[in-house]
Image 1 (cartoon, rainbow, N blue to C red):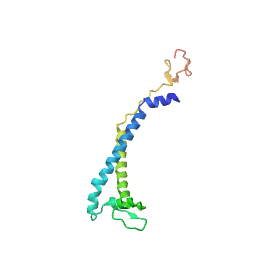
Image 2 (cartoon, rainbow, N blue to C red):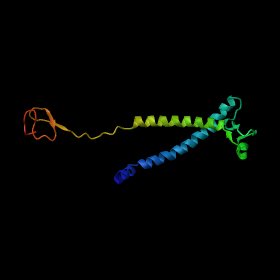
Image 3 (cartoon, rainbow, N blue to C red):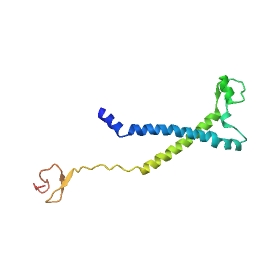
Image 4 (cartoon, one colour):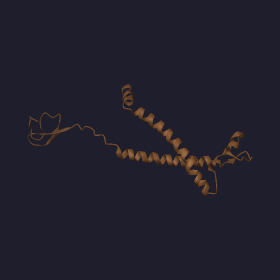
Length: 144
């Protein structure tokens, strides 16, 4: 088991995973910013100057002008705008990961496994016999 773990570490799998996590986190931050700062403002403008990040339903019965006021008061709320932004971010991120994996699988070369022969051809009768055979079972040739 230790040999298997050592091989796992030395083949670069751990390093590849660490790099993947780092880039994934950075890319998620980028997508979140793209959604909040580039995609949603024009959509909000088209829908009547709606700021999606400020859409919420206060659950304590009070009225708050902004999400910041609600959070400062510590009031419970359903934050619809944050949920919409996060859903769009998730969809974009999921699509990009899907496209990356699809491209990676196309580019990945098939590993060629060495095929060890299990049979050989008899020099006398040209029939296939097991590699370990000392004598051909078809013609009795001993010089196989």
